[in-house]
Amino acid sequence: MEDLASVVAPLRTIDWEDADVVEESCRKALEYLNENREILRKALHDLPNRPELLALCEHPNDEDTAELGQQLDKLVLYQDETDFRVRMHIFWSGCADLPHNHRWSFASMIMKGQFRHSLYGLETYEDTMQLPIPKPLQVRLERVGSIYALHHTILHALVAEENAVSLFIRGPAVKERGYLVNPTTGRRIWHLSVAHETPEAIARKRMTPERLSDLTAKLDEWGLLG
Image (cartoon, rainbow, N blue to C red):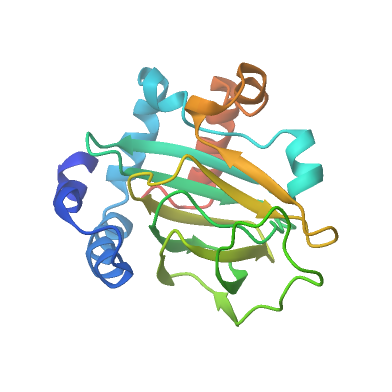
């Protein structure tokens, strides 16, 4: 059986600044992994033995959930030497994150559930955004099988209408920080790379082995691991 590293190896040489290339290249890997879920199962079951990956996994803490609406668990299944990563995201019903950009371009495939996806346009870097926050330029309903790619300069937001899971490939980071926007005040809520976060912030969202075990069981229950 192929492993995750061999499936995504062709992504090492793609241009992550070209969203068209990202979508086309990642689509092949995402569809293959979706059709061969035993590869995902193996990577997930290997996580407890991969402390360098487990340290990158995140579980939403009460403070962030209250402020950001991000009821979202992130499981890092693979990190390449060129700094792209393969992750699984579990969006819990009611997850409604704020408009935000990313520090990297990415592609995503919906494996379970659905969510409303709002795209706002290009990022800006004033201290605050003008109020009221501009309306989305596009709203999509992402269903099982949907695949999309976004450049790191795009502002977007997701609302999970039910428990949802996505398979997610993020490119190498090109910025030290991204941000979310509070739609009431227009205030930036900065999201830093791990290298620039405080130990307290990292500890708050650390994935515990117990939480990982629970998530693995839930993904298995949902039939997402083959």
